[in-house]
Image (cartoon, rainbow, N blue to C red; front, side, top):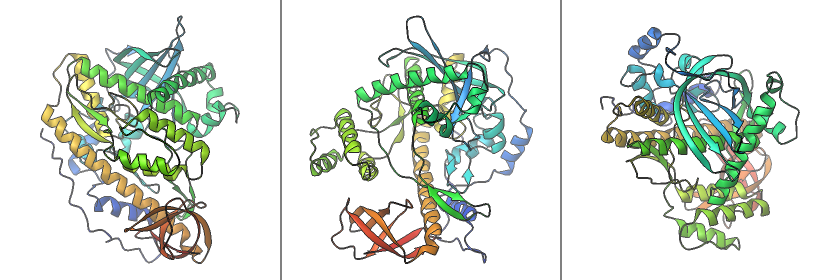
Length: 500
């Protein structure tokens, strides 16, 4: 494998200096990227390749599925559209679901300078104040994005979902499609839940209302099966900044999942499971996304006991799923903090080389085989998987050796960890910037951490977390407390409280 996977030299943490006019959040985010070894800008060679690319890849020899009623559902401000969906009810009552994934490889070939730029970062980084895309925006938001009103090449994942949520007759092939409507979670979710009228983009396309409702029915079938098998439904708080026109943080908002999020989540999990099996059945080594059986299960059991619940001695995603469902109903205010504790004890997901017939499993999803393949504009493992799929469809040898895939798995895992650090830091920076003018105010809060590293509390409104540096003695996780804001450091993202 010729590509150099060594990240650029990391900067010195804390080297950012605010300009005379105050904190520049975008500049701070760029510094955070460099501190974690990211290089946000294209190399001159990659710039030249980008300029020489055709406006579109050739579409000859593809199945033509433009007549199907494809649509996308994403965040309102998303422009890098990786997937679209459509569904139809079959005579036996099953629902055929098709997920179309952007054919990014048709313009971003392996072993090119553009590919080298993507593999160095392996992911788009979303800081809340600026997005640092894995691929240049000319590609990710235009030529390789499944934009509404455009004909695009795609990899199609086709599956039949029966009344019990079982997936059968999975198929994978290349095709030409047309996105008929760009929809968003914030309007589609409340409509599907019966709390809002039909969104205008849905109403504007004949037949689309019935189409999206059919997709929702298929997704609910998939969700019921996943719940039966023990998929974990967690809820953590990750507030994102609301910015004024001049770049100041004026509020923090916590995105809430709704029925539209669930629709897409269930389709993507099913599609990624189909892809994992597709590659394995064809004898092709692959990258899979895994969450191992938790080594700290005993601590999860202890947490349950503290709440008057029982969990078995051996890890069981089914039992843990039931416990979490009960706790969400019993104590919704503290459930995000319990979720966060469980997430930390489960351990992070990682990428791993998986040989044909071998599956390492994803504990959190209760899935035996699971890969990442549905977001090739923003995740490099998905682009790698796409190239493996296309080689299999063409009857060609895989473009990566097992040693290549093993190296990529470790590199992508490391870069994902680094991107989370950047995103977490910038959430803290935005929170500290918002509270700078509120020093001395008192807030209701919940203690979220108490250890030798310090005692931390989450304010209920606005949704920020800081350290209790005065009066922390005796405070324990889950306690409801009142805290007074005594100091902030927006550059470093520090918030200090005194317990009242």
